[in-house]
Image (tube, rainbow, N blue to C red):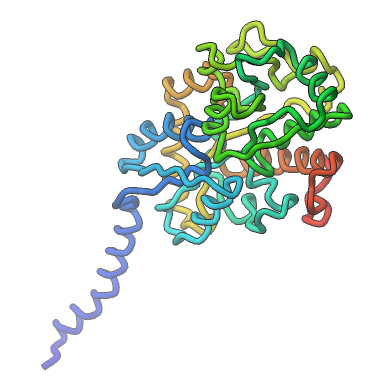
Length: 336
C-alpha cells in the first residue's frame, strides 16, 4: 500500500539522484588521468611534460600517467586524444606541429577549434646543432657546405611540420640550399642519432639541445633569434651571419597541454587551475629558463590568440617556401 509518507520518499529520489550527480561532478578527478606525449622520450616536449606534471599532480590531487605516443609527426597522439571520451581524463601534451597539419595534409583535426588549451606552458628558441666531429663552426660554414654539396648534408628531422622542417624551410629562403631530411620520432631520437653520426645537423629546441651542448656532445652553431640566449653563451644569433632571416623572427616551438573542447567546463577549469599552479612552480620556471625557454603559462582565450598568430605566420612562411601542400587561404588562415 502506497502511503502519503512513501510518496514523499519517492518524490525525494530525483533530488537525491541530482545531488549525487552534482557531487560526482565536483569530485573530479576520481581516478588517474592519462597524458599522451606526441613525441618520443628525451625531446623538448617530453622534458617539459615530465618537469611540470609532478607539480600539477599536487595541485590536482590525482596522478597523471604519462605515455609517449610518437608517430605521424605527432598526429597519432592527437588523434588518440580526439577519439577518447571527452571526460577530462585524457590529456594531449603537444608542441606546435598540430597547427600545421592542415597545410601539410597530415590531418583535418583542428587543434584551435576542436581542442581547448589547458595551458601553453613555455616557448623555445630553436638552436642549430651539429655533430661535434663536423668541421663547421658557424651557420655560414654549414650553409656554404650545403651549397657546395647539394643533397649530401643530412638533417635529423621530425617529419612534416616539425620544428626542423619549418626552420629548414626558412633557411631555404637564402637560396641554393639542398639537404637530406631523415625523420625521427621526436627531437630526443633525432639528437641521439646526431650524436651517433647518423645525421649531420638538426634545428632543435633549446630545451632539448642544451644539456648535450653543455656536455660537449653536440656543437651549437646559432640560435634562431635576433639576439643571443643567456643559456647558450658564445653562440651567435642566426641573423649575425644572415641578417635577412630576421623577417621570420621571433619564432620557435612551444609546449602545452590540451583536452577536447567538449570536455565539461567545470573539469576544464580544474585542469586550468592545476596547470597554472604547476607552471608557476619555481623549480619548473628555473628549469625552463635554464634551458633557454620562455615561460608563458597561458590558457583559454589568451592561448587561442597566441596559437592563431603563430599558425598564421608559420603556415604562410611554408606557403611562400613552396612547402605547403594546401594553401592556408583554403583553410581560412589569414595572412599575418
